[in-house]
Length: 242
Image (tube, rainbow, N blue to C red):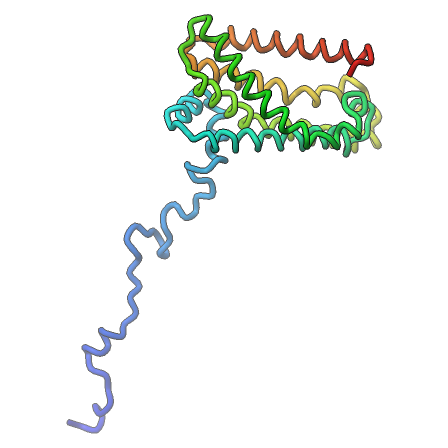
C-alpha cells in the first residue's frame, strides 16, 4: 500500500459517518411539520370560539354530539363568570364616569367576585327553566343539551362584554379631549352592547339544542325577557330599592 493512502478513510467509513439530512416522515420543508406554522389548531378553544361566531348552530351541534363532561361545562361557565367580573370591574371601577357610577358603585364592584357563585347557580337555573319552556312548545332537547347550549353561548359571547368594557375605557379617555364622548347617548351603549350578542347566540344555541326550525321566536322571547328585566332594574333603582 502506498504511503499516500495510509490513514485515508475508506468508502464504507465515509458512508457510515455521513450526516443524514433526510426529513422525518410527515415533515415538510426544512424538516418542519406541515401544521407547525398553524398558530390556532382546530382543537383549541380559540378556534372553536371563532367558528362559533360565524356558525353558532353548527358549533353548538358539534359540542352536544361530543357530550362533554360536567367539569368541562363548569369550566366554560366559570371562564364566562370571570369575563363578566372583569367587564363590570372595568366599567365600574377603572372608568369613573357618571354612567358607570350610576349603574354600579365601587363597593358593589368589589363584591362581584362573590357574585360569581350566584351567577353560576343562576345559569344552571336558567338552563333548566329554558329547557322546560322549550319542551312546552315542542322542543325535544334534554336539560343537559340545554345546559350545553346556554353555557357555550355564555362562553362564546364573553369577549363581547370585555370588548364593550374596553370601549367604555376608550370613551372615558377620549372625553378629556372631546367632551362629546361624555354624553349619555355615547357613554351608555357600551354597557349594553355585550347583552345583544349574548341574546342572539343564546337563541341560536337553544334553537339547535331543541331542534326548532327558526331562531326568531326564541330570539324575540329572550329579547322581551331581557327588556323586562332591564326596565324592572331601572324602576327598582329609581325607587332606591337596589
